[in-house]
Image 1 (cartoon, rainbow, N blue to C red):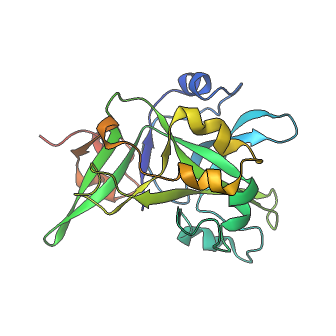
Image 2 (cartoon, rainbow, N blue to C red; image 1 turned 45 degrees about the vertical axis):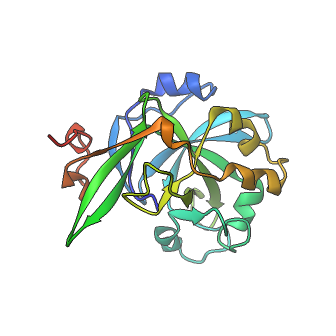
Length: 221
């Protein structure tokens, strides 16, 4: 699963990389946690271009009676995302890119868990494969999202058996396009190449979501 991540890249740089006209203003984030706002890019069906939005992490399906269901829907498994009732509608037509430049995973060592920060080797920002929903029983409507996970690659395997789906840039258009066939979408939901990723143990400060400072990403000596 993926339960925490970072977004330290400036809005201006992200706007250029992800080809959006305007990126929401935000401060650097070192420990983004579920129920908090995340930055996502999606396709505007009316204007036929990409737009950036702030979404709550934890998907609230349109049919839900209570938004607290989103607390349990922060991740969607790649092998069931197309059929599980909570996700299948969004998988068909409401896909998004959730922006990040690192994420955390915890390795169990005896009775304790050691957090690791996982990034691309070149330090560049990247996009998780995400789904979004609009819950219209709130005013204004609550827009939320989830991250899709898949099997771990060789970098993640010693730490955890799953990882979030990271989409290469050449697949952004296909993922955002509502007309992309489901079979083609499923082909995108695979582990990112391990050769392009790295992991580094970090402080247990990240265990507490109230901690959101550069110390969270500082490598252990």
